[in-house]
Image 1 (tube, rainbow, N blue to C red):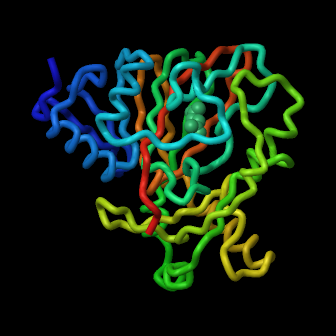
Image 2: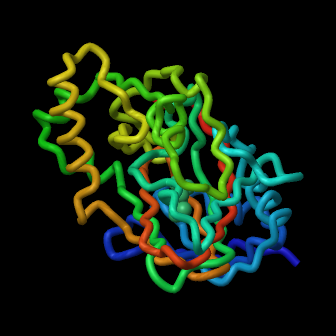
Image 3: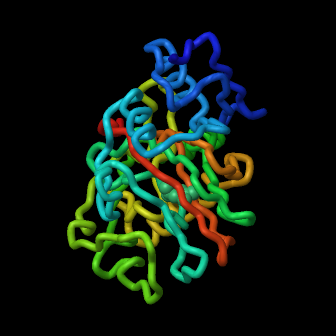
Length: 286
Ligand code: SIN
């Protein structure tokens, strides 16, 4: 039995950023209309939350492929026999920092970064472990028109060196980490993208920079870069642009990397946290 799009209910948050989806079982086949409904809601709300979804790894793969093609996930070893699924796992006794603990849009250093990421929760700690999502659209729309004209047309340089390079954060790990991070010189490659990105579905603009992957804005001096990027990071992550996601086991969340950035909070030392993650292939940002 599949899901009929007439059964799908999308309940947006008060400000329209993030929505809860019910009336669909992600483990069952989706009609074409249901897929269109979900893709449309995802583009409009940035983050979709599906509570109470039991799903095995094969089911997560099938659901991802119903929405698009797999993205390419570098620098983190995939699950055995599941080359497109990452297990985000942190053991109760693990001391290494939690994965994803810095604002970023997934793999923005790629020429065509993933349009979206899908995360399914298996084991959720009783405290901490929230994921924060920032709405790049509203951050852009809240800027003055003078600031918007200064930023529009600029290009930002992205690289994976800070987390994944040989001199990066993971290379300096002194504590044991369960997730296998693949440190590589390839992480030092750079890619430029528009600092202001236009969403291919909605046509809305958003800020597309992050402290984890943006190295600089093309053509600016270091002091100018520091000041403008710091302003943008502080602005993008203001409370009014952020949705805090509190996990329950068996929740599926899919977010739009074209318009949002996210941050995985820690605060659950002593507890196990396990989620499974896939990415959806995307286009070159414009
Ligand atoms: C990530 O995908 O960046 C991590 C998200 C999380 O663990 O909450």
